[in-house]
Length: 511
Image 1 (cartoon, one colour):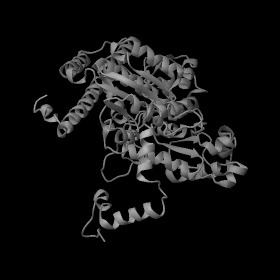
Image 2: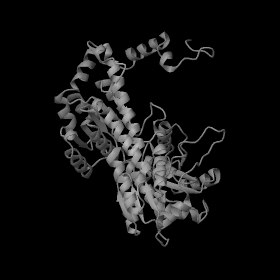
Image 3: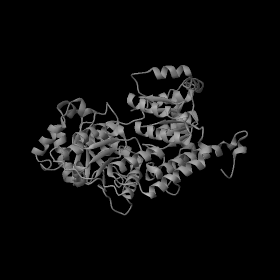
Image 4: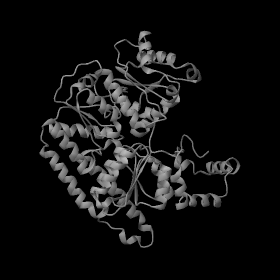
């Protein structure tokens, strides 16, 4: 055998050993029934043609590799951002395993969540018994301060009523009557993870606010939204607001939840917005969302409770951060301190230093609506020319926002906006109208390999690289980090090109 206790091989090396290569060849020859290599190449080439692009873009009832996840994932993420909160998914064990693994693979941290373990009998007779027993077990075994319930496709298709079920579960003694059990209906077959995040945040706030009286304070609520960089971004937000001396509450703070230290003790509930702060957030003078697509229903609810509401779009780069800080200054009456003005100047200086290497580069961007909007705005500031801007969970209003942004800059003249399209659509778009670089998440690596367009990972989920989420993308400091990420990829590709004819001309020591 190629591997033993004395010779442990990495999988990349292990599967190149003769025994494995022979096994793979046998599998291809005897079990896969593959067409000839020539036929495979013929079809692969056709998928990169304009003829195939027209057929691909014409499809309306099939989605291939969407750049989004389902509602319950967003609900589980949202619940994780509150003190002592256990996420309870009313559905099958397989569903909750997907949400947990998705978050764990990105943040490289445990993601605690349980399910009501619905199976075939519950699909026929309803999941009440599963929820009653599941709540009792979760409360007894995991000692949470709050249990937040969301649903999956199975529970939604059969019409389980969470509000009724929770009332009955409390009557049966699963949890105490005064124990907080907020809920959100999150059918996975509509919307996306941003919708699920919104529904769960609204569910948690309404659980504490519905019967409470409001008494306005000077505090401001901040909803960061569903963000794969939330560990660093939330801390950056707090740092900037503390510098401004703005009283604030982060609604859903996962910064410590998904960044626990290796100190020999497992913390199932690390950090999060405290329940007392969540209750007191009703009294805030305003609620500011940093990702409008993640908070539509929540902001409507906050406005109905008497708060001023503000919807922003991913405060990345100069203009995005400017809008956030100026709005916070306007709402709080606090001036923007000199320290933040210095940070802004340093970012602008760094952009000027590197402008010649970014000017005219063509980039395609995909991801959630707010990320694509914020990322595109920063690229325009850098002199980059967006080619394709795609968001599977972006709708017509988002597309209009994007087009207005692109029209505001000469660098946006050649860009195309694609709302509701998936990554197989993007394959056709890039094959026929290529870009120099692609910005998105780990799911773009197949496009990188197939089309030869370098991928820059800057949004959720990032499975195949480590610890990106520990560095901010929000604010001026985050903008500097994003700038360095873009430049590193550009310079790496320039150096990699030195093996081609004429490439040695650009193999420079100084750039």
